[in-house]
Image 1 (tube, rainbow, N blue to C red):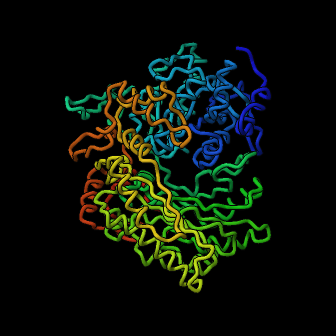
Image 2: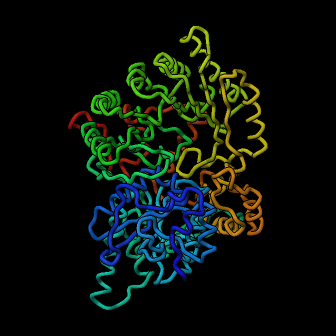
Image 3: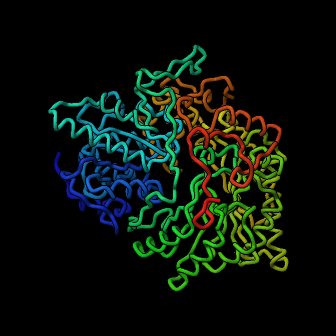
Length: 626
């Protein structure tokens, strides 16, 4: 293969900075001196990958070890892919332009089911066999982690191993075992097979190796059994979880991109997990329990990150940032710390019930680009069904506080197609948005000048490990009808309505609850030219549907069907710590609109995660746990 000058290619593609490397704070090491190397592959473009905190954490954790090395690799956009193929080149790492296939591990971050075709495309561009069974001793081990690893089955055939749960400790455990294997080979002169290597890695808690599990199916297509085929393999793989988040390493030398990325700012993770119990939310279930970082530690981290990156904004990141027990004190202290440098503080995720007047006033000191709230449903009945835990009064009080503090833009996120949803619930979304407009009028002498209320609706997609995992999606025609109901109910010109493509949600739903047989459809979709499926301009619905037809799989059977309680679910052998019985009870509560409280501030709700994993809710008050 002739080596092509990078400059020759980079001058011919859109956004060459995606591939150039050499950003501020990157890590460069000598591969020849390393014991274990990782290519951290993100199955989307640079701007998206560089916005995910977990990706940055792994980069930091691995590179802090002297003889372990991690480099980054992103999915090349279609123009760059064409250049790579035309010049007979392979996909390389961003830092040292090393071919991906020359690393010990190729590690993918799984954030979204619709990125799966990009994974195949990246493996193909790396000149690696797509199926795990076709890879030999000369190939790297291909692994994955992230929220989608909680149902790895649709892509199980493509991966050698998965990490289930939080990866900070697991990735070092994997590197340590692999280093020992290399040392053993060197000292004995004997080659340790790929099979034996995977068997040793499979004994690490949280590591799932698909080849060591057999899946059988019933005549009606449902899963009959999932059983380990080796005596040393556990029947269930339990997720990894950090017991003391505050004591865990946090990336201090964040790589600073040369171009704008989706979240171009310091990301300060103030806590992990959420115990609110929204019944549709997979993250809220699989990242339990809540574990806070100490406020004093967060101040130190924030100072270090600002000094080392030069960013002028700090985003307080978590699933529900204003649930952090000392959020007002933290914001006040950060504002005081950084006021001379004019560093902004942002809260990307807000719950309406905790957004107080005082917090709005604190935020008012910074730039006001707009606020985002997620009521999720338009009626109190449906908000109780999903256990959202907020009411109309909470939202109106919150936006009124924001308007009094000078805000003029509010985004409201809802879902369409939730279980038990009626047309009255849908019209309730429009009515709630109209009440937000009215709240603005009440603050601004009856005028709406400058106000922008954006209503966005995503479509309900049932996710594994949630109380709604058994519920089928609605048909695309029915979702289109419900969207029209909402669109027709919105009257105010101050309200803008955005909606999600039901074709994408349908395909996402099929894969989300899919089993190992889905790999054939994903592979065929990629062969049909599908990639960047979450990008509107690249999405190819017809090719996806053709792929399902060509391999003889009905996606509606996976997306629309209600699963039975006694059915073996495709992800039954993967444990988030939350018991299946608890999820069943929660679904029954949903059907009658019965809500539960947050176990962080009330009694234990019995999900089972703390007991099964030996971890506790951690809420700090000074140096003591509350």
